[in-house]
Image 1 (tube, one colour):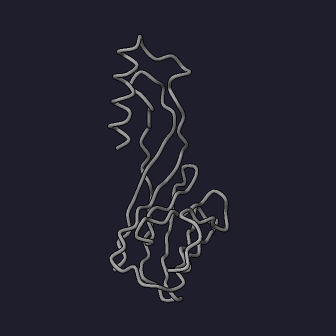
Image 2 (cartoon, one colour):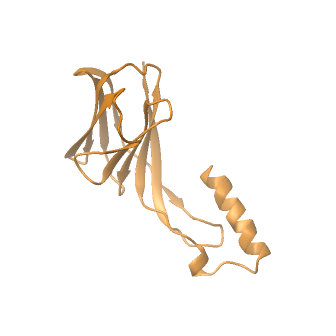
Image 3 (spheres, one colour):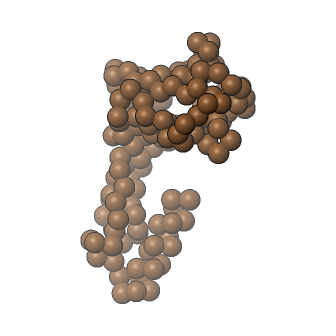
Length: 142
């Protein structure tokens, strides 16, 4: 989707006389973990993240959700909730070298995964300089 948006923006710039620095937009460095949640059972869900030795946690009481974006114990970590009220995406600001993610429901561990992200340079349009570095991974929860 990001690539498609960047291509569309690049075509718009080329057709309209080119891009300058003000038209390049912004993005932020980050590592994204996408959740494939097979079970959307009710309960107290906790996602614990070890980011280069710093630990943060996010808690979701399902089905009593108040927000679609959950503030975690560290402001550099956010957890978004999908339309079906299951875990969707964990976002970690910056470019960590090692990330461990543990998912629990009612204190029972459902998934654990260690990532060593390989970052891509992201441009908001082909004619723009590198705007940020991003990587992603995935966890399936049965």
